[in-house]
Length: 428
Image 1: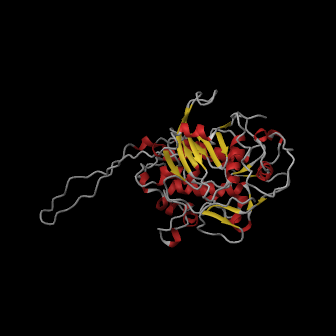
Image 2: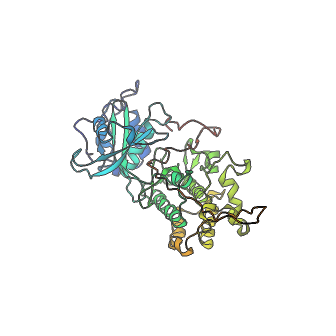
């Protein structure tokens, strides 16, 4: 299986800095017959000064040179800067067949690995391996990569509406209507379902609002596969691994035992559902102590009809179907079950959400906020009605980690560390 690539093998020097590594015979099979991606990643990570691009999965990936990526981003100009996350800075660019024959003319997002950051070469390679093979309407498309000297870059399709996190939580953003929230939840659920039910199942392991990217019509696509893992196979019930993920989204049984299953992703999905319902972040230390962890605070309220309206996002201004919202709350309650075997599967979640997309926000008419009247003590006259001023603010973002308050990342072997700086890139 070959890959579209430049005249020089860009993987030739990817691992040359690793010293004292025993020589490994190149016996990797083509990826369509290879059972375990993780085994492939481990093997490639140990290779020393070898061109392994012919073994790299994904015949549709382009191998770019650093010079080409400088051209399409105008030397990574500040005017093309989209933001920066744990991986590194992201710039907008534009590619076409003048850059490389066969390329579709389109805007792209170019992520550059920050060598001083906490994410490393292994996570970069994991992203290439998984997204090089996996294709689905609800997974972000990886177009190509660059591995030149110490430089590691990834080239993705450009997602004009940025991340769900930026759309849901940024201070001056217009509130997402109910129908859009359900559309996003359904799209993300379909992406996870595809991963869990693939021939070689994948556990995403880092499902959160910043990793859900949105195109121009709010179609949700999962991004950032740096922590993805092959699911259990055969008679295995779980994958044992270091605890890695993001605090507030990680399933409690995974935190305690290191046993990773598809149900771990389901728990994280439940947290995102609660964020869509409430408009609150999964972790918020500015709130009272008992409300800082969203899942722990909200779960007892999700099933109590008398308490339900207390948790709904006030910015929706009542423009949602109460029955539909209660069904979403019930679904979130099931996803957050402390017993992983009692959580629904992602395909069951899709079946529950699909009928809820029929709601039309306009059926309730247009709501206009009217400021309270002010009574003048001396004359008892009321002032004129005021109106809430909503300013539109366009956010130029691609990666959910950009221009935001970064979610603390979880990494632990024996103890959960609440605020580590970044992910580890150590092999698992």
